[in-house]
Length: 229
Image (cartoon, rainbow, N blue to C red; front, side, top):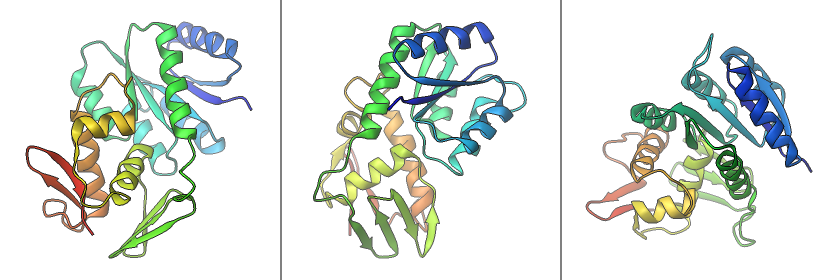
C-alpha cells in the first residue's frame, strides 16, 4: 500500500522536486503551499508523514505543527534553514519528530522519511499489543496509542507516546539520554540529547499534576530518566 506524504512549502520548485522524487519510490504525495492549507489537508486525510517547512505564509511551520498536534500524532519532519538551531529545538517542542536543514540532499530526505515511517509502522511486541496499563490516575492504551490522566484524554505526540510507553514497561529502569535517543529516535537520528530533554519536559507538562515535582517520570541526576509506579 502506497505511503501517503504531505509536503508543505511555499517554494513551488522545491515542492515539485520533492514530489517527483518521492513518487519515483511509489509514494502518494499531496502538496500544500501555505500553513492554513496544510492544516486543512491534514484534517481531511490520514497521512503517514508530513514534511513541513518552517517559513510559510498565513501560518508558519510551528503554528501548523501545533495545530496538527491537537488532532493527530502523524510524524512531522520540519525543514529549517541551516544554522537555525533554536528553531530546531522549538520545532521539536511544538511536536515535530525530526528536522532536516536546507539546502538538503533529496536522497537524505527520502532516507529519513522512510526510516521514520518504518519505525512508526513497527508493531508492538505480541505481549504488549492490546495492553491497557493503569498506574495511579494514568491510563496507557498501547493498541489505541491513547493516554488518559484523571479520566481526561491527553494528546501526546508520537515520540512522547513512544517515550512514555518504553518507560512504563520498564519501571524503575534508568535510561540515559543517549539510550533513549537511540531506542526511540533510532541510531541514524542526527539530533542530540537535548531532543530527549525537550520531549521529557513536554511529556511531564501533559501528564504530571506538578511537572517540577513529577509523580511518574523521574530524573536520576547525572544518569537519565525512569518511570516509577
